[in-house]
Length: 155
Length: 155
Image (tube, rainbow over all chains, first blue to last red):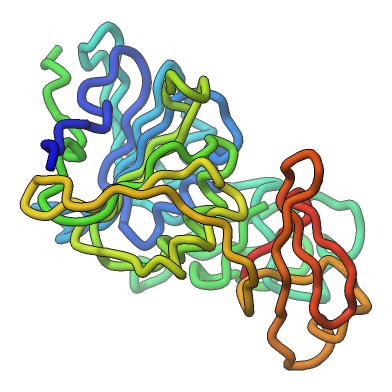
């Protein structure tokens, strides 16, 4: 039968952002945090790809879109290894690693069912910290309970 | 700065399945229905891509995996235009369109909050039909209410 010539056109982005080194099992959470399920820009994803450094990785390429640091740093909560590459006219113009924010508001849910943020129209607010094992945790500004990575739910 | 040489390796699959012509706004639902968020195979997605036929489309490529017809036909509920291509050793060995199943069980939720399937451990069961406008709808075997496409929720 005919050759498998069709290729997914994800080779080189002309303009846009590449987010690399996302842990494979966190790719869809990162997509949700960045709200990429709803945009109109061409977006390409790969998961369970070979990574020399981490064994397995996910990658996201978004055409014609750039992020401000605050927005992109949200994904550090689930993908602290992620690196960003910004492309303009097929050239890399910027490259950096995500940084874990010190404080986050509004986009993560408090794990404590009794927390006021789960009952009233109060936006969540957390201090972000890293425990002795290097795990990222969220300390709720209101109820003071700690939400661990496996319990993080994002709106 | 350095050239944007890195390419997402999604060109030609050696072995696996390509699902093409998925409506862009249904890509993530199709991913969920096929439970691709959890697998270990390399998977590549593209959305909001140019399509001559439909204006915009999504595509999924799954390495080293094939689906039986019954499983893949589930996505006809949200992506009736989807086409399947099976690849072996870089060659297309099979090509077909999804077909809307006549009946589905277990993986969609009944829209009626009073339906027994929403209260007891009864798996859902629907007759699938197409209305006069060509829209796919689900007729519940138990409560006889109709779930429309915009209300479909998949487990």
